[in-house]
Image 1: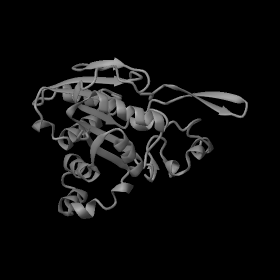
Image 2: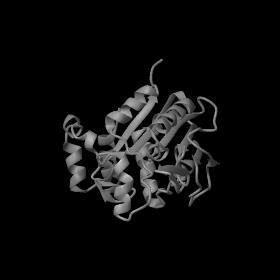
Image 3: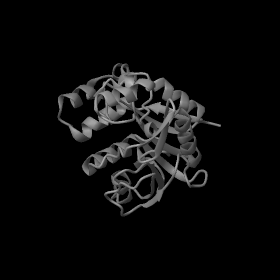
Image 4: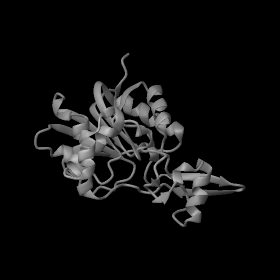
Length: 259
C-alpha cells in the first residue's frame, strides 16, 4: 500500500523530480468514532460469529481500529497497517508498518477487512488493482469488507479543497494544483463508479453499492432530527439510488464472489 510519505518520481523533459505523497490521514478522533459506528452498522457486524478477526488497511489516526478493539459488545481482534505512523491512539490493537500494497499476512486471515479512503492513495491503476487483490487474498471466503473512495465526479476534491480538480484529465491536475498554490504534485487517484466496479469484478469480489444506506446511517448517527434524515427515511430506495454515481463518496460492501 503506497500511501503516506512514499516517494514518487516524475520526469519533466530532462529533469527528474521526486515528490512525497502527503499524509492525508484524518486526525479528528470524534469523526473516526462516527465512521467506525457507521461501518459497524453497514456491515451488520453484530450478526457475524465472534470473535471477529479484523484488518484495517490505512489506519491513520488509529481511531477506527481503537473503536473496534475496545467495543463493549463486539469481540474484535484488530490488526491495523499503514505505511506511515500517524496514530493518535495506539492501545487495544496490533499494528504493522508496511511498504507498498502487499499485506504481510497469510491467505484467508481476516473475517472483516476495512479499506476506508485508501485506494486513491496507493498509486496508479495497477497499484489500485493490486490493493484489491491483496484485500481479497487476506479476507476469509465467508468474510466481509468495507471499501470507500472519493468519487472522481465530486464537486470539491477533498484532499486539496479545490472545485472540479479531479474532473480534469490526470495530466492536468498537477499543473492546476500548482497554479492554485495548493501543492507541487497531485498524489491522489479518485475513481469513477464504473471504473471501481470493473476493478472489483477483476478482483473476484461480489459487491453492493451501499452509498444510499451510508447516507441514511450518517444522518441517523450525526443528525437524527434534521430535514435530511426525515427525507431519507421516507424516500423509496429506487428513487434515492438514482444519483449514486454522482454521490461524492463511493461506498461498497464487498465479499468473495462465488467460486
